[in-house]
Image (cartoon, rainbow, N blue to C red):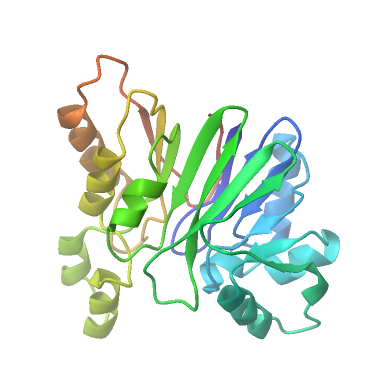
Length: 261
């Protein structure tokens, strides 16, 4: 299984996962042109489905146009699909919308995808665990706070794609309105660098090979700071006698990967 991060950050998010038999997207938060060009330039397969985490624009901005050239299934919770449909400006291809139930696993050829509920200020948001070819990748972004469910769902992951959105000190000293700062810091907001590191340490095991940091805020974080926060936490906690996992910050403006899982 491989991961190709087409875009990551508060301005847009789109991930591509591929196995030997199929390929899917998780979110489509950048333009359809950018998605298509990125896949073509990397020589990757056309995706056969799109899994949506939630309806905020940085996760679905390119979906409506993308579906016109790629009429593939769109899967998410009932609440998210309803919100997505309400955001479309033209015809809503509801025949392509498929409701999923959190906690239930869905099979796409040799790929298994399971959604889990999370805390975020959206209609019915979820994060995803993807399993294929003997490997497991977990995508956790737009999470307001750490919960027992996150730890349980992410157990045994070979790859963790984790939100490392902001540094609280930079956020509080910045120009955002106080109400927005409180939203980001609240339990329905976003994970800080420190929270992402805490989550990764909880999910450590000898088979963890990759930690990818995503959804960084352009205004309230630095890639170097997010990386060093995670590297320091993992280095201090790792006690398995095996190589440390590779840590990488997903790029905002150009694709990251492909990363073999």
